[in-house]
Image (tube, rainbow, N blue to C red; front, side, top):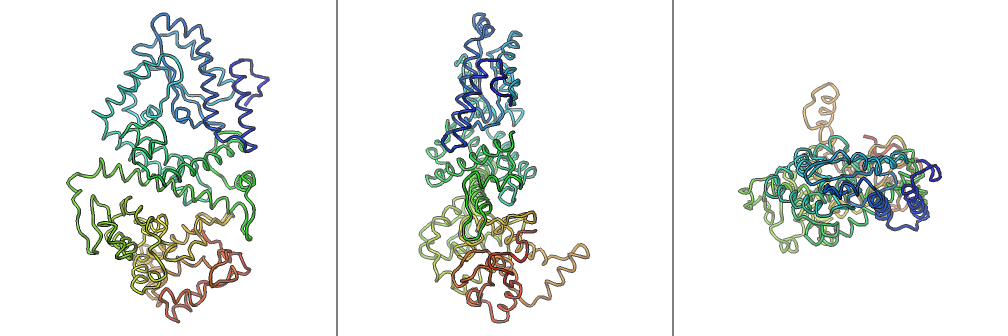
Length: 550
């Protein structure tokens, strides 16, 4: 970006001075609403140019008034340090040629100042038609916000857009939203599984929140983020957690923009140590500050991914699943029902009477390959306190847990849902030691908790007949293994090496003790095998192998 003194355009110079002051306050941890204030500064610039523009005045006098509208992140008031600026100059019916001079007045100075500016000049019908032809335009219109000019044009535009959306394009738009989410996962992956996450577009990134926001605008025409709770899209607890997660990720994104000097959404390996220092993380209990930072980040992104799953569940049940499938069907497990291809608890009373249902619903899910409904996931999270020592040590429940492990595959991942609801670490409290834990080096591809689940899935894949010499070898070896608790051992193999002091493991880095395995129903020979696969680390708090390398 050019220095302020080299900018000749006075409105841009004033805007840059205000922006520089806001960024300095942010870097000093004195600016709580950087996004909103950067948006306000840009709005002031746009309004000043419009107000002083002779070209705009002539068009208005000639009966060719227009509205200047903010789109995308600028429209949502989520302007980060190096975010794009997207503008729409909207006319009622025809676009006069004189508008090009106004574009030069408002856009060219921003380009000269090295802002990334996108703009469109459209009349109302043209813009609405394009919105329903292209998903990227549709979502920008959903985020449209009036800045200046003729407000009646903006109001009529949004009213007509809403009318066509609700009467002609509702299901088609929801279908676009659903397919876009699937394509995004294919293109950017699941950021909660990556040590170098994409803060914006990957699953677990800001786009998960945007998808929920768009869905709520399509379905209920909400006006602001707070309406997500008022209209029932999120519970009060979920909204508070969402607000904290967004503010945390936006803070990291702005620091990333500042460190790189450009728009950047991927937290690459080389920026992570500096980011931890900038955010005032410190080493704790032998764990490096960068690992603590990355653990906190992955926890927030995991929550955003769960929010995205809530959105997709609502889309599925409201538009993509046949209405006749809504009649509940009984399962083989009393207290569980199936409705619209999703598992539900029959009611919450049965959970109080039979807490083991909190575990059995995952077994039913794995057997039938039917996912839990979002309502069921919420119920599991809210009733975790019922999973006490008696439930954990009950041999029948231990057997159910082992059966669930054997049903976890990459294509249908029951364990990931157990992890996200919190019941996995409620059944195995020691698992908290590796929850969202990051091993900071170039060898680790996944966070340790995700890596451990992945290990279970890999072992389960060995049960299938091999298709080449390697997989055939794995399948044959798996058949010969006498210890059928290999999935349990795979899930827990990194807990003793977590570097965190655990109950019955006074020295971090030691192997898990005999009582731990006995609690899980391991016989002496099986315990010996598990401990053979889980030798102590060379030094306390250090891993003997790169856990997370998959």
